[in-house]
Length: 94
Image (cartoon, rainbow, N blue to C red):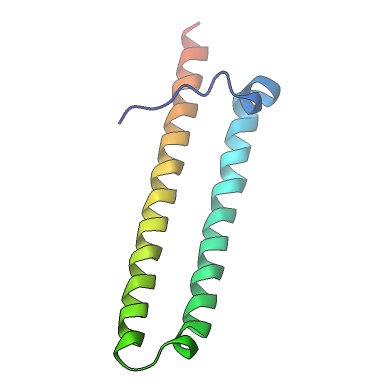
């Protein structure tokens, strides 16, 4: 997996690698909480909007979108953590 170079981002320039690690530890779990809240809200309110066979379609569509969003979020998290590890390795080598 090719990781982006995050060394020139404002976050890393201002707070360093430790700040980027702290950002990842706080931001990504918060995004997962938002996804869980959205999922819960949709499955609580969603059945009220559709009836009959459309209800199954809406449920499958919501489930597919949730799986897609969670896999995208996990991929973003892994790429960001790999970029941080690469920055740490570059700092130790210098």
